[in-house]
Amino acid sequence: MSRIHSGRKGRAGSHRPYPSTKPEWVTVSAEEAVTQAVQLAKTGISAAQVGQSLRDSFGVPSARLLTGKRLGATLAENGVRPEIPDDLQALLKRVVHLQRHLETHPKDLANRRGLTLMESRIRRLARYYRQRRRIAENWRYSAAGAALQVE
Image (cartoon, rainbow, N blue to C red):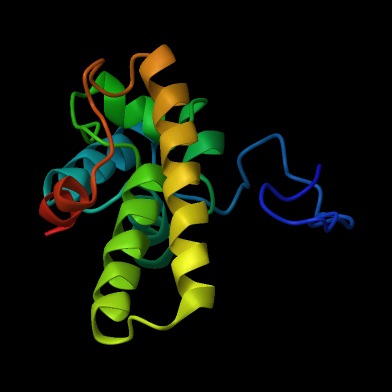
């Protein structure tokens, strides 16, 4: 695969093989992990942060190995899926940060181009999520709307 907005190839290399079964040293049951994940997600943190918290606090190396489903699917079943997916939310947060930077540094043309590329990435991702009904059909990106959604 290649990068979206560059002529370079992208990331390559070998990866650690992912285990297919739950390690025997994990003492947490699947039900306990799901309840902890739902409680953590209700506090407003992202699915990635929920997985990280499960790993660090409860010793769950992978919620997927424990429950048989991805953490996002498990949270969606329990009704705590965020209204905007995590990757789109992260891009919106980066755009808002870059907009604030460009307000104080208007001649930073390299970052202005980066902002344009990031906004096109958001539009492409939003189209994908609209097709899969993960965000509202009438959701559109706007700079002012991004600032409101992030804060």
